[in-house]
Every structure is written in structure tokens, then in C-alpha cells.
Image 1 (spheres, rainbow, N blue to C red):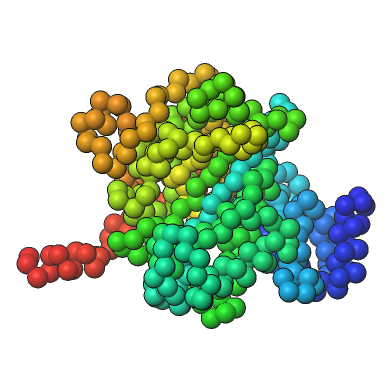
Image 2 (cartoon, helix red, strand yellow):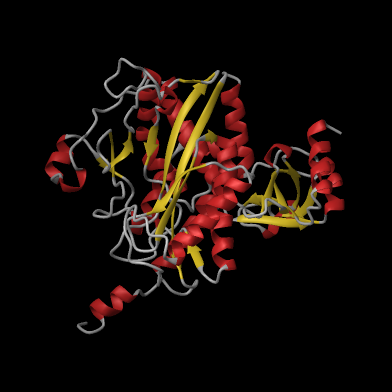
Amino acid sequence: MSPVRENILKQINDEKISRIWFWFTDILGQMKGVELAPQEVEGALADGMGFDGSSIEGFARVEESDLMALPDPASFSVFRDPETGLAHSAQFFCDLYTPEMKPFEGDPRGVLRKHTKKLAQKGLVMQVGPELEYFYTKNPHSTEGFDQAGYFDASMTNEGTELRKKTVMALEAMGVRCEYSHHEVAPSQHEIDIRHLEALKMADVVMTVRYLVKEIASAHGAYATFMPKPVFGINGSGMHTHQSITKDGRNLFFDDDHPYHLSEFALKYMAGVLHHIKEITAFMNQWVNSYKRLVLGYEAPVYVSWGQKNRSALVRVPRYRVGKEQASRIELRSPDAVCNPYLAFSLMLAAGMKGVEENYPLPDPVESDLFHMSEKDRVRLNIETLPGDLYEAVKALEKSELAKKTVGEHIFEKFIENKRIEWEKFRAQVTDFELKSYLPVL
């Protein structure tokens, strides 16, 4: 047995951890898992844990349903009481295999592992830093929140702020560094920003943050939702994703001579993201509701463009601070936090590196407010728009060789099949808007 596994088993025994979770996700990024007794962990670390993949969305067909979840020792983390520091449970993220112990082609975590490993063979590492926005409500059946506060309001008197504080403390107690947390623009809307990490580790952290935000809210009689647009007329929730590439600890995105302090590598990477964003948007914004957020007027990016001071742009370049070369990065502002982070990060990386490898040209930056720019001016500047709904996004995805190659044929086809079904169900609905607008007059 490896020293890492021995140390994990010793820690479980020494700290008397009685609940150990094995976690993985389906292709839509929904958490799946099973709880093991401590005495079962040693065997599962060695041999994995079998389960029926045919019962999970986007996994195996009935005739090939047996799968193995093999815990990744590097992903082991312990949930601790923030007040006492005592451990009460622990978890592993798992990689999925066939019974013959071949990597399962429908495993989203395996997709990202494959691409980060390929990147590592060149000595490169993808660094990711997401900003996760979400709402607190009083229960799952209501959008009634806890405050009427706004952006960066510092009041500690409302329940939502206390819940966010408890969540950050819980994350810090398990070793996750939260750079910032604050109230967002809309009432009862909050944000937690995670300090940048290697992409695979960060995808695990995103899943953990989503889990803890919801669990802590539920434990205190409230509800938390990452739904992109739960309330009409106010801002929706996104997951702005900061990203860069490093080599031997050096940030390849930094160049002191460029006006925005970006290297040629970074500019080509950004060109790749912009070039391919429309065809991969379905994976960044995978629900019908995602496109209710991506509309004009609520600080959500709609136009395919980039800039530094321009928060209406799809990709923003945060301003350089002297002596902070490692912080040079780009910020993709379209994803929402209910995407599958393993697939979303894989596609961001694939698009960016395609731009680097094929020397994509980068359009000029746009620093004027795109939300108030005339359509004539946008056409003149050749500024395209993101897909307007899930149907448009899936149609663009269907033609994407980049996406198919990146996520693999199995996930590509299963994802599209699922999204077609979702769209048809939505399309058949009679909405409140239609009833209010048409019933009285038609």
C-alpha cells in the first residue's frame, strides 16, 4: 500500500471519522455518491466500488451497466466543525472505470484528468479561479429571500450573510482558500470566490462548494440555489471563471511590455476561447433557465468580445497590479455555476490551446459599453452574440468538432440527447407570461 493511502487510513482511524463519502458526477454535473463505513475504505481504495451505471444520467446502457468508482487519494478531504476543528466526515472524488479497469468514456472527471495530463506532458498547468454566485431563499418552493441589500453591503444582521459566513468557515476548515466572499447585486444574492487552483482540483472544489452551500443552508432551515435566473427583473447568478497557464510556476500569460500586460500566448489563448465560445456555450450554460440570465440589462455577457475596463465584454482582462505577475489572467464571464465544471474547464482549455496552437488572430478590444452600443456599430465591429436559448446553443454544439473531440463521443451524444429532451419539454409548456399576455385578449 502506498504511503498516501496508509496516511489516509491512519487519519480516518485516529480522528474517528465515521462517515466517508465517495463522490462523482453524472454528465450534467449532478453530484452522485455513496457513504461507506470506515472499515470498508481500505478495500475500496484498492479495488474501487461497483455500482449500476445504467441508473445514472448519461452513463452506461443497461447491457453494459456495471461500473467501478475508484477514489482518488489526492482528492481526500475532511469536513471539520469550524468552531472545534474536530472531524465529522470525509470524502473522496472518484474516477470511473469499467469492470476491466479501463477508464470509462462517460466519466466527466476522467475527461478533465486526460486533458490536464496531456497539458502536463508539455510542462504546463491550467490555473482556474471561479466566482460562484447564488441566492438564499426561505425554502425550495419560494424565491422570498432574507434581505434587500445590494452589492458589497457589509451588514451582518441578516440570515443570508450568516449562512455565507458559516459556509466560508467550513470551507476554510477543510483547507479550501476563499479569496473573497460578499453580498452580490441582487437581494439575497451572494458570492464566494475561490483562490486559484489547478483545474482538476478546482473542479472538485466547485462541486464541494455547491454541496456545502446547500447543506449548510438546509441545516439552518433555509435554501440555497445556484439556478442562473430564479427571479425576473433582477440579476442572475453566474460563475465568472478566471484562468491562466503556468510552466514551472511561471505565469505564461504575463508580459510586462503589453498594454494589458498579456503575453502572445495569452492573446492567442483568448482568441481561441472567443472563436469557439458559441459552439461550447451549451456546456457552459446547459439549462433552459441559463439563457434567462444571458440577456441585456443585468450585467450578463451577451456579446462575443473582450476588454479590460469593460464588464459588458464576454472576456475581461483584470487590471495588472505591480509585482503580481502570477495574477495575470483572463476572466470568462458567461458560465454559470450549475454547469459540469469538469467538462466546462476541459472545453475552456481546449478552445484556448487551439488558439495557441493554430495562431488564431485576436479581434481588437472593445472598451465601450456594449449594452448601449447600437446594433449598427456592433455589426461594424463584427461583434457576434452568444446563443439566445438552449436550442440555439445545442444546434451550435452539434457542429462542433472541438467539443466532440474534447469530451468524447459518448458524452457528446448523451449530452445532446438530454438537452434535446429538455428543450422539447420546455417548448411544450404554457407559461405564466402567455396566460397573462394572451388569455385576456385572444
